[in-house]
Image: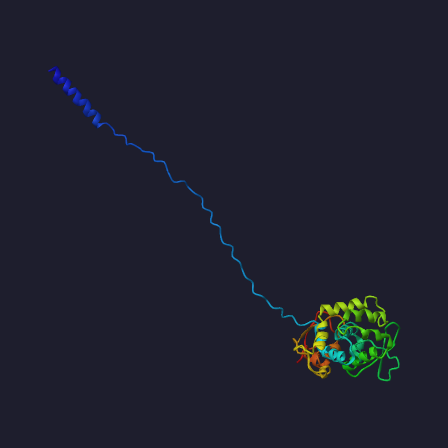
Length: 274
């Protein structure tokens, strides 16, 4: 009986243990993977800008050179004066073709009367109302300029220089008394090098011709300017000087722009009739 009671007690204990709450076994698993921060670098976009060609109209100096380059080259062939020197003097002394003597008298080199038998114009220079030569056409001024230099003994040494020695000519003209301005040689040389006028000397000496140069000297008083038909008024511009530059008439410019008077203002844009 005692054994039986002991047996029953053991069974009850075992039963109680088996019916108790079961605790789940939690297994902590270490995260073997390490978090990585990935930095994605954005690709820089390179924008290729299209090349924009300069469509600006030529400067007044370019226009002047285009008009008179062929004449200067012809005078180099006939009188042995570098075309670069002739063009640079023309640009400088005529105020790029806009000075009063150039506009009113076709005198591009400021040559005074000195026994001149032709038409005359009076203009303030070193003294008040000095006498200057007046020509029917600009080409005649270029011819007279060449004759002026070749016909005076004080310029004789210049013709001993190499025909393309524009620096020698620029300094020689000042030394021979052509100009009183001490910076006259530097001004000529600067123009020649800035606008590459020496290429016209090379064309004459090499017997070649720039395709952009005019083939005839008869265009000076008749052919229209082949460039853009707009002009921005600058200091010294007048309707008359513009009519000469673009080979048109004052009335045509006024009509095209609805102008009631001849007055112009700096910066004003004009349409030039074809």
